[in-house]
Length: 308
Image (tube, rainbow, N blue to C red; front, side):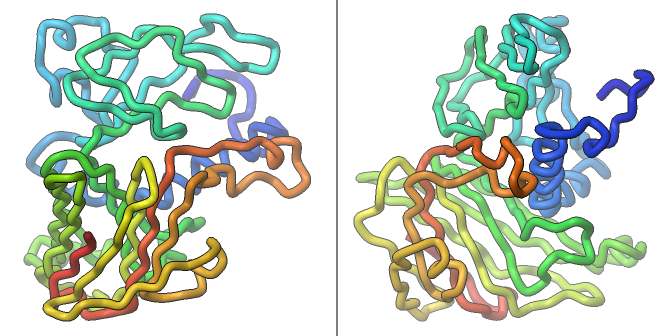
C-alpha cells in the first residue's frame, strides 16, 4: 500500500511467502470481478465501490476518526488493513485493534467465525497472510473462476457465494466490458435472493437474467457456494418448473467433474495458489463448512433457478 517506499513492490521481488500470499489475494480479486463490476455500476450514480464506514453505517462513532483505517468494499465486505505494528514478530505476524463492526452479524471471511456487531474488536490475530476481512451475514456475492486476466473468465459459468441470514438480495450487473454500448441500455442484470425460513430451511432464488449485450452468453452452468454450519438433511433444485435430480459427489474431484451435483465440504481449503514446493504451501487455511452445488448449463434468461 506504500506508494512512496523505495523498495520494489512486485510480489516476486520479496520472495516467499510474500509471492504466494500476493498470488492468493490477486486470484481472490479476480474471482470477485462480477461483484466488483456490479458495485462499480452502482458507483455511477450511487455509493462508491470503496466506502467510508459512515456511508453505510452513519452514527456518532463512524462520523469521528475512530474508523478512518477501515472501509466497506461494496455493501458486504468490511476491510480493516494492518496499517501499523502493534505486536509484530520477526515474521510479520501481528494483531489488529480497534476494528469496528456495525450492527448485524459479521463473519471472518477466512475462518467463518461469527461476531455480533455494534462492537469494537481488539487483539484480532493477523498472521502475515491474513488481511482482516469480514463479510456481512446475508451476503450474496457474484463470483467467477480464478483467472489472470478477464479474457480467461469462463463465460459459460456463473458462481455465487451465499451467507444465508434472514431475507437478502443482490442484483448482479454485466455488460460487454469494452465499449460504451451500456449507455444505450445494452447490459444484463440478474437478481439473486436468499431466504431463511422456519427450521433453518434456506431457499436461494436466481431470477431470470434481464437484458442483453453483444457477446452475452445465455447458456451458463450455475455454481453455488453456500456457507453452512453442518451437512443439510436434504438438497433440492428446480430450473423453471422442472425439478433437477441432484447427485451427491463423494469427493471434490467428483464434484468438479460432474453436473447437477452437490458436495458438502467440511473444511474448505483456502490456500490453493501457493508456489509449488514452498513452505507456505504447507500452511493449512480452512474456513466454515460449505455446501457446493453445480447445475448443468441452461438458458439463464428463460427460467428461474432455485436451490433449497
